[in-house]
Length: 173
Image (cartoon, rainbow, N blue to C red; front, side, top):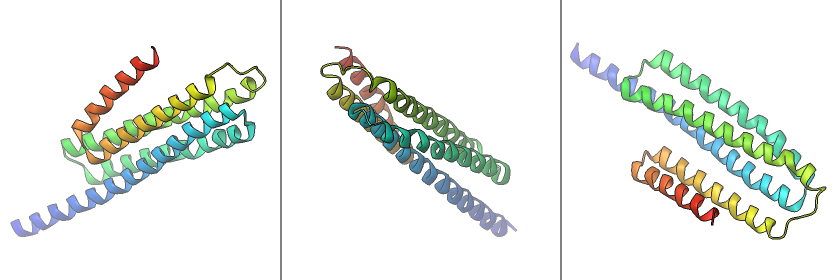
């Protein structure tokens, strides 16, 4: 009987791990869409390209849909797998990460929305370069944060926090 129980536990663990990997693949896909949206929104603003800005605004729907899929999958895992406390924290962190990615995607969409209005105004000297640098900084920070999350690398996550603080300080100078 103990052998049967142990085999069952192994099967449950493998099923949970498969489910979590599937959700994390969706998180990475969502992260890639968000990274792209940030860059494309910045480029649309820099180039005063309203068509590109519209693509960013429309692309936000895919980001929103992925958040919904991730949340549904996470709820399914909780309901079907009855995860242990540490596994439950992992699943709940997926929900928080997807919510934050969705919010960042909304920021990119809002930046793209401003392209139409700002393209009618005179350009501020040096703003294009500054905007490009900020977009690259944000993209890099997001990539590092996602890498730390997927690798479950606490040290890299801590580095992301320090980097974010230093980058913010530098931008204010």
